[in-house]
Length: 357
Image: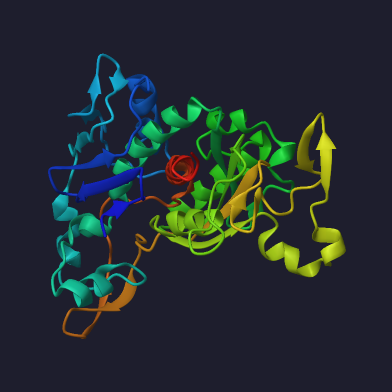
């Protein structure tokens, strides 16, 4: 499927080395002020070439809105948009045309379709996430009207990780360094490590932490459309994602119920919880506390060194990849994680409005 969401929906199109990437957003509420500078800034956070530790493909990634807005606000009709590709070097992928890159989508894509676009991965390229960032920016603008704040940051690169949870950091600092980590000193170590890995012609993975504040209580359903399940599905749809956890996640298995239970209390006339081990979601429904989660990204599959593989006929061969690739996806994936989270929360907010008279 190329469509995401139920009431707030994104349908994306385009390939890495095609004419462009675009999409259609349906279900965007009418009357929301459209801040084009903000929307473009979200794309700029994702675009290639923004620092030495990301791919040096040079793209302006300027978004053109085709429909769905008028006199600076959304109209409630479908929002069409496109971002044209400007800096494809398809020849870099000619030596990959008849072979399969290990841990990439080359083999599985061919098995599914009996054909594949080898230029930059085609439809399976992470360049498709341009459409997600545009839709996520619109979702953020809508959520701004109800005070919901969506943030993400790099919390781990390889074995280098932040020692504390999100409550111990000023998340605004994350945008002040190229790796998007809210601890300046650890960010420097991460950047140095990524640079070293890049020099080795290799890649490295890590973890992005997401935080969503001021979410109304009551979003999500108790069975199949649990809020955390939809967040997990959204995150696992992002290229290179291998894991998702929310709240205490896997760390919680070592505790007892008496230690893990979030005890209710009356805080200034509002029912809240004394702790937030649940990550803001209980029984699949938001409880009004901060929603926090982690997303694990594997190392990029394409490495710039000799690697054993086979051709399309199964014959052994050695591939030396060319082209411009990220040594670590995390810096550019932070806005993508935020975009997917914003779309899920807005979708559930709109769904929840349909369940009350």
